[in-house]
Image (cartoon, helix red, strand yellow):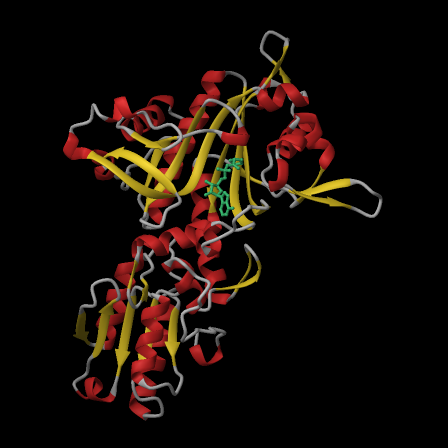
Length: 447
Ligand code: P5A
């Protein structure tokens, strides 16, 4: 993309309403625009990152064997009357009446609707196990929407639902989700720690939240510092293997890590003092096992091997896709702006032309731009007439992890400069070497 033809409405001033760094940078970098409290337009740069995150979530869900579909944002109230949650959900539910006076709502989650789909089409245990998921907008009329996309009213969520014949099978689905979430967050450059949590209005006893440690996080968390040494890495997991998934779950959840809702001071105090941590975290996902709560209420039954009808065991699993943008920025920024991890960056590399209009410099930038594009990478070429300082400031703000700077002086010596946004370190090299280096950096992130 050439910056002169892009739509990147960066702000010079820091917007007064933004209290935390991710919100400030998302507004300043022209990624989002607030349209009403907790409701945002996603401007091109923000939309690009949202799509990258969404794609990683899709890939990892499907790797784990989960099947995508798409349910609507608007739902009939009657489904929620069946589960009993229409009244329970309270003020957070946005209730709408259509022209025929029918009660509708903007879905805050989809347990009821997916259960309805299931009971309409599945009647035998032979069709199990089954996990369906979608990535769709949700609405929760939060009492205090704040921190930009972090606590929105309209927000983008991946929500998945498993249907199993037995509790054991459903617990395997739970474990499988935990494993696939670990992998999903790591691909985004995030460490998200699974913590024992409280199930709230979704219900059930078994639940873990995934938290990214950040001072601005809304949740207070308590953990054994040993959990932060764990990484999923590039291990290959057979998601059908009960033992393997169980093994990973035990590895990642056997150390103490809890949110304030489930915190147990006596247990916490058994950890050696130097490893006890009290911190804050951002909840980027949550998984639940709730058994037959919805299937019994809504008549989602299958015929078992003995011919008898039984309600299915279910769980649900959510990832805060739009919230993740805020969480990643909270975890990765400096005082100049965002520092995107390679896995989610909106453009792979920025090209800064130090002397727009200089024939040799323009030609070298064009050559770079074309070669990077041909290699399947997406460069953002600042071909505007802005002075060099302004170009650098914009690149630093929008946070592309790599920048290639091209100027007449370097070109005379046959070099351009490759700079890491994270370390600030620069290296001079030939144009060809810079292209090869950027390709090499992104090789692990290309599909
Ligand atoms: C699991 C999927 C559920 O709703 N039902 C379907 C279950 N879980 S949850 O924990 O309530 O939400 C899942 C994730 O969505 C994100 N989230 C939000 N993001 C932005 N703004 C909000 N107001 C908001 N509320 C929830 C969180 O990341 C949460 O973990």
